[in-house]
Length: 80
Image (cartoon, rainbow, N blue to C red; front, top):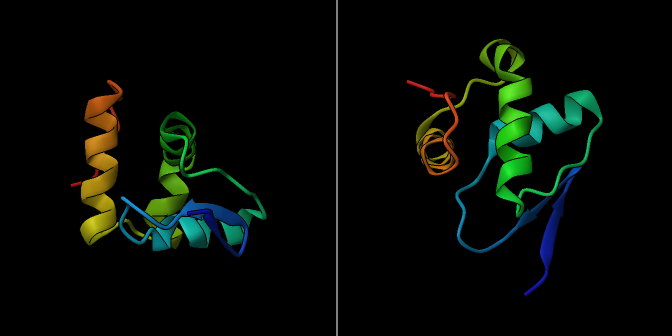
């Protein structure tokens, strides 16, 4: 299966929840990221943590997914 291109982000369609905050930030910043590459995805969330809190809060399944990535890759990023 290929990747689904969502307005500025290329997100794999399998094994991930919907990432509406990521998609909103990609549109807002006019950036493309490959969400299939977990370290890149995590770095994007770390770099834009303050903007995410104001523009597109991370909630639900997306928050759980990012917290899991942070634990897996040893990041101090944590969304409560």
